[in-house]
Length: 114
Figure 1 (cartoon, rainbow, N blue to C red):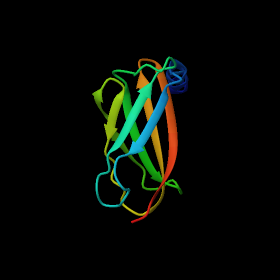
Figure 2: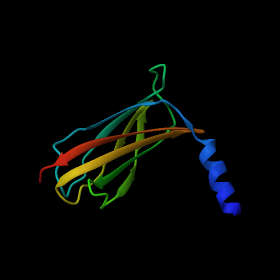
Figure 3: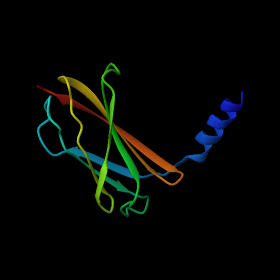
Figure 4: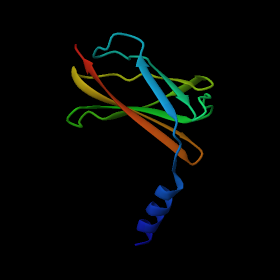
């Protein structure tokens, strides 16, 4: 019973940050090798967001092979993550950015041909 209230209280602490999240691979998508994804995070005023905790999660379209990769901040508002796709096919790439009590996320579908 108490854990229910703790989880509800925790969920209410996060606010929609309305961050604009951009996410692009920098190489041809393929299996078995790390692929660098450049991630940009900007606030509602289009200013880069510094110090966010950014993660990139991949999973197949059937919600299997889920893996989470921590992104590293290269410069203010610019982050990089390097997922490894184990098999070819359709993949959902979910990027989440959190700063303080704010959070935004974006999902993009990619096809990994080989």
